[in-house]
Length: 169
Image 1 (cartoon, rainbow, N blue to C red):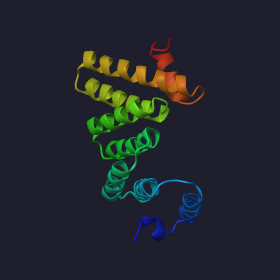
Image 2: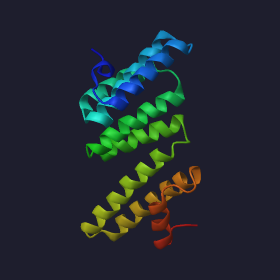
Image 3: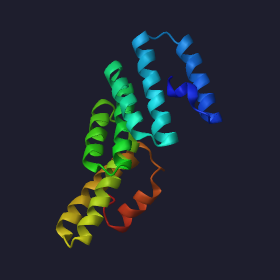
Image 4: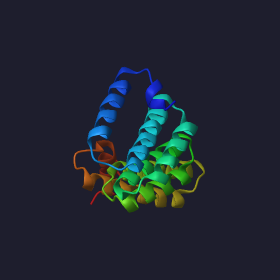
């Protein structure tokens, strides 16, 4: 039974009902409808319930079926989120890059990449390697600048960090 049929949360049920109605009335191919169903089930599994293995299976199936680059970018982004949550930062970065190749207007992907780079910079400081730390912080700054350029007014903490560290131009 698809996850969308068994989820007990009111908001998730409402989303599922609306999504099912839209799938019936919007002219799309059966493959696109199936891809969306896997995407929706992945989102609900990963973000609502923390079932990352199941969510990844749904996302990989959605990727197999989805042909639209824009839609694929969101699937890739969500796969990156799962890898970030699991502490698999190298894999997460790979999926964020792949998402941005298909859709360069995903500020949340730039932000998440910056957060990972900043985290790695903090790790380098703890290991006593200030040169490597600065390189990671510089990379984080570049990603945050891209996110802020796409959505001015968002990422206030990142904006402040860029100013405080002298990386804001």
